[in-house]
Image 1 (cartoon, rainbow, N blue to C red):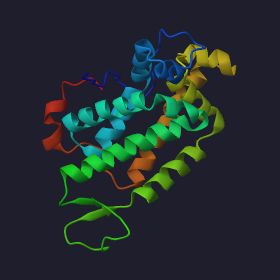
Image 2: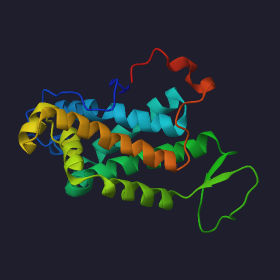
Image 3: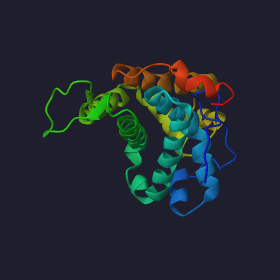
Length: 211
């Protein structure tokens, strides 16, 4: 199954899934509608993050598809960590992006391990454990209300209006909270040293994409 990013912005789209539904639980039971809802809510953000790291549209699309297949396979495990779903989702995206980056550009990047020398000419080592620590710290710094908004948008099947009703705040507060909260993700990835924009030679074929 080929998956391509469909969202034009960072915020989740409105969903037709029932508001009270737990998308991950439904995915665990093989519900394709729930999987589609999860994909619709999250693919714009995840694709943007993958492109931020990989700087190559086609490769980012391939990794995005692999990422969703992994979440689909691990829905039972994913559902057991309900309080950490947002963290787990971003860490999976980060791991897959970094592993693919090292495969695509072995002369430029390598994963750091205890057994490897710390200086090999031509390679920049990526300490994935340190990266994970930074990502976790960034997520912990997001205000609780914003984090709850994002988690509901991604994992409950609710649209922004329903989230506003659930949290008893104006819809405009939810719109801005989700957007500002997700933008923090890019600040974290930028701090890890990844480029903010795709390089020109890798992005020429992406001008017609909708992401």
